[in-house]
Amino acid sequence: MNILPFQQISKKDVHLVGGKGANLGEMTSAGVQVPDGFVVSSVVFENFLENTGIENKINEIIGKIDLKNSESIKISSDEIKKLIQESETTKEVEKNIFDSFEKLDCEYVAVRSSATVEDSATDSWAGQLDTFSDVTKEDLIKNIKNCWASLFSERALFYRIEKKMTEQKISVAVVVQKMVESQVSGVCFTVHPVSKDENQLIIEAGFGLGEAIVSGLITPDSYIVNKKDLKILDKNISNQDEMIVRSKNGKGTDIISVKSTSSQKLSDDDIIKLSELCIKIEKHYKSPQDIEWAFKDSEFYILQSRPITTL
Image 1 (spheres, rainbow, N blue to C red):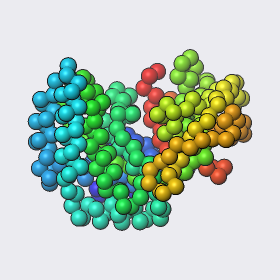
Image 2: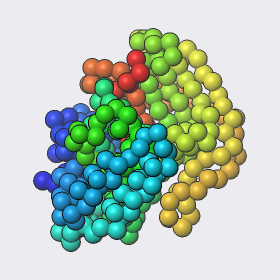
Image 3: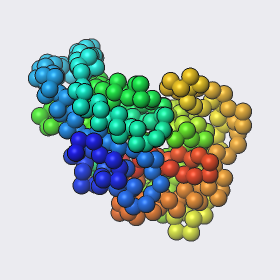
């Protein structure tokens, strides 16, 4: 199948659904609370390139890039993105995507790129590709194509050429997932990324959607927890005067002011609860994990988990 619900995906499907998609399917099967969703597989993207006849044009453009000339990379990236965005998907593909969207029974989804070489221990594509929050059915196809196009962003093209991966087949799947309008969100590293202490995990937390942390808009709280006895060893509470939320008109996101700027983002009990969940995920994968999470109405949702590549 070209479009796969999370329940039908495991880590064996990385070539079809990418690292992100495979991890979401794997965690769903392991009983971790993951917002429901599906993956538009890499086969759909590859068929799109073939059916529209733009694959050869893209390869020609990449072949002419001069890495020493940043303007050359930008022009090539813009040209490839335009080709993808202006080419049509088939009616059959659109129907299958919309049918899967209807089964989620929600108004808003996150649309997230998942490269088929992403999140491996050797080639980390994390942060190279695009994610779109609060997407409605009306903009779903457009943003799936935007995810495809992000495989050819300036950063991704530079990375690909610099790592001598131009001959390697790199494809992209797209994760479509129920949007959690989180009250608090953040990341957890199940091994302390600075001290490399395997007995400690560190949680970063901020009010609103996680984009605020990823984009550097805010400095999050950080909590260090001993994994053996689940004692909180250290808390660093940051002032937060802005957060990212869903726009009132339902289109994208807005940055708004936060009233309780200096309060702790997660209670001590919730820090322990999240720590237990992240330790469970680390044990499942048998390796240190970089985990994205969201918190809404006293429930934690895991949005992504990938190996920590910097240890």
